[in-house]
Length: 137
Image 1 (tube, rainbow, N blue to C red):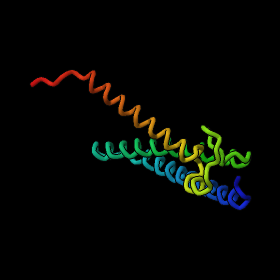
Image 2: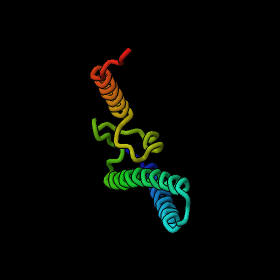
Image 3: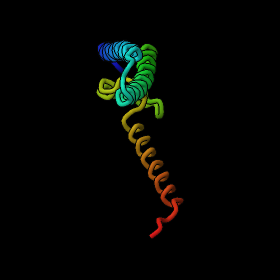
């Protein structure tokens, strides 16, 4: 169970992270608008610009997902469930929450999921290797 002081610390962290994401989004939007009006460039400049735009769009998508996680964490904080693991229901330590306030898993469940993901990725690679056609000599 978190203390009121700990909850306020987490709230400040979450609000600060949300504020930074929204500022980044505003800056990114302005840069995209400025880039769109830049005409008369050669093909290399256009390719570079398109590559930068593609990267920018991927970053925006990641930031949008993170913003959703932040807002979800604020809801869990308001409900008093931010420190409960969604898998096992055990408490999530305050130090872990302070380091990553959007987390929904205790360290044990997170490590278990990561191990499962590693095994599944290994199985996919092995399967692809087994199905690959042999190289000609």
